[in-house]
Amino acid sequence: MKSTLDAAAGSISGGAVTLAGGTINLQGLNSTKNLGYLAGQLANAANYTGNVDVLGAVSLAAGSLGNGVIQVGAGDTVTLADNGLNNALAISGGTVDFNGKTATSNVTYTNGTIANAAGLSGDVTLAYTGAKTMSAGSLGTGRVTLQAGATLDFGAGFNNAVRNTGGAVSNGANYTGTMTYAGGQSVAVSADQVAKLAFESGTTAKGSGTLTSLSFAAGSAYTMTIKDSAGAAGVGYDSVTVTGALDLASLSSANRMTLNLVSLDAANTAGSTLANQNFSWSSPQNFTLFTYGTLSLGNGVTNVADLFTVNYANFKDAYGASAQAEWFTISNDSVNSAIVLTAIPEPSTYGMSLAGLALALAAIRRRKRKTDAEAK
Image (cartoon, rainbow, N blue to C red):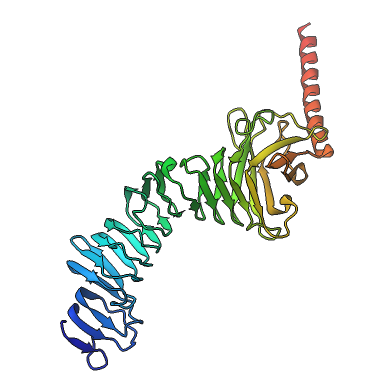
């Protein structure tokens, strides 16, 4: 197609169509027709959403292809002619040279080359399988989505926001941006060496570590294991040090996050009896959940306990008693810049544990006396 085609006079719905320098006037009609593209333009094409298969090396002007999805395969090269491109781009082996121009295009990247992309502000989805290294500025400034099966190897200074939906990362210490984990994942805070983390609804953070910033959305969770209640934070029990901002601003009494409490025995069996315990109803024990440089809370929040739902289903004290809701409280220690969990078992519950232990010891003593008597 090298001349001008009025879509009102001739249909392009059938057969293959390649635009090689002319104009197709779609006159505002809806069209999902797939096109081959060498040069030319679509006119009055705001409602065009088909795939545009680039054929070779082309120069592309903003607005010339409606809202078509530009497919750039092996051997193809697209060079931006001006600012303002907003078509979606699917790069599967070819080259897109942004040529220093601005673009808001959303990009799906499988393989190939993205060049001179400082002006790209659209989102980039990494859809490849395996590992690829991304250097600072190589994907523009937009958010990067990391899909399952892909490993993002951070080059020094890479700082795009990353939303991780199930992929992996390497060289996280090189990364200076914020990684957000999407729902359905359980992630150790120190696993990826990334210093700035955010957790969406449905995600769970776990373990100990030191971060620069940490954010929790409503519906997210943190799993805290306790093995030695007399041990130091991060050693006897899980604790996270946040040197910068701890962001709980999206939480409220109606939209909470969950704190999962898990006891560990000497063999690290989750949900088993606590290996070492030094707290009782008469001697409460504080556990540092998070320390922070700054704390962000939502408007009107005065009690951080209202922001958490405590799940204690997998917690047993050293005497085998299952935890009760009244055992635990959460507070903000503003003097020491810490969110603190306080364990205060109820007297009746704790007494039952001790009573059970006493009965067990008494039974042992009776058996010993009987054995001794029989021996005589």
